[in-house]
Image: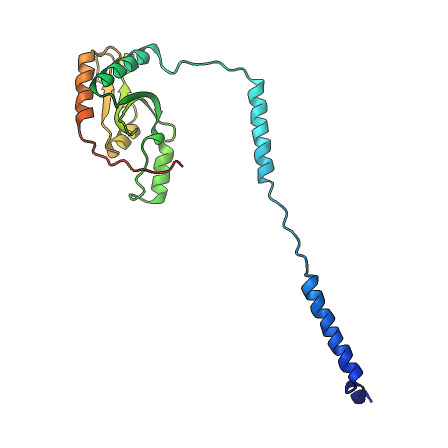
Length: 204
């Protein structure tokens, strides 16, 4: 009897209708996946920014001179002598070292390059002479008054070695240096052919 029922047209019609309904449901009512919760990174960043602003608002601020009196005299002397040597060159003060030199991407391991960049992260130059393309041509370290009349030891061998490997000459200058002496040394460095090849890279 069951075999007779399975062979009837009614059973075939029911079977076809069932499959049709299942296909319709799959196509028109897909299973909705549970959404992953959003990361609270943006909220945390906004909270940190607000906390920083709140702290700043609770504290008073005052201005500091960029240079001491001795450094200002050296700066004025450098500006005058560099302008006399070349109208394309400029003098800048308190320069962040990582803004003007950096590890060669084709030299050393990535880990070493990252470490080297980190070591230079807070280093600064007293003064720098830049050419018309804004490349550092001469690094200038101002000798402190406590070393007047003496040879000042290397203030930071990390700075001087990094500059040497970047092909940038380092010039020491005393607060009471005579303009003629400064001009002679600057002329030698400025007129010399650069030993390093500046690389055009995007800011990090």
